[in-house]
Length: 229
Image 1 (tube, rainbow, N blue to C red):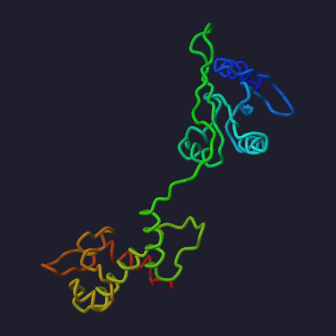
Image 2: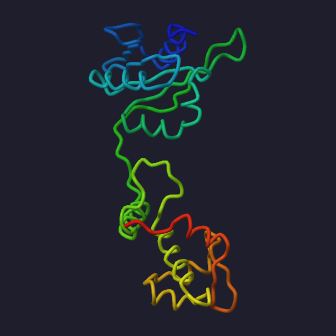
Image 3: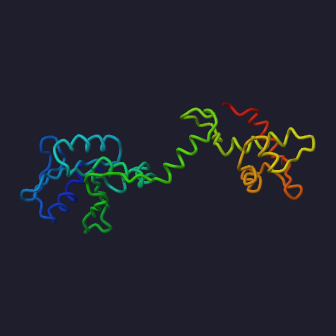
């Protein structure tokens, strides 16, 4: 497939909406006019990718009505796997999207799907997620995980608190402790909830209100010999 193969269905799609359409005008793949409306520019590529996005961004200097067009079958794995995220990216950039579906019959025309219309975009902030981000930042002790690291697991504030609980239990002669004892010794206010939920499988309840370390808990102390600050 060539980019010129995309031109006829895009032209037909725009003409059906009352536009006059011409190809290759001053470097733009498709330019359409309807009355006194601002021009519509469509950039064509056989696959969705960064070159198409950059081309569309450059055309925004000429008009706000810029579409990126590419065939559904040749869109590539990037579009198929990340459709939601790429739609959000184009929405933020103010770019529209036209996806061209091949005809189902030899005598049928290709279908142009307007997946996104261009326009100004103001992202809505997610207050809850923003608060969770700041809370995790404030609660995390030190800077235990380098940014961009592929290391797993991430040393979260919750994991730090669970390790504090596990280390205290390991220091006890009895090898067990109550949430109250752990809370008083470590300052982990959520010690009771951490032990009861046992998210990591590190703790074992041996009596009412008394917890010891499981085998996974002992392994965790070896895996994280100290909590980096």
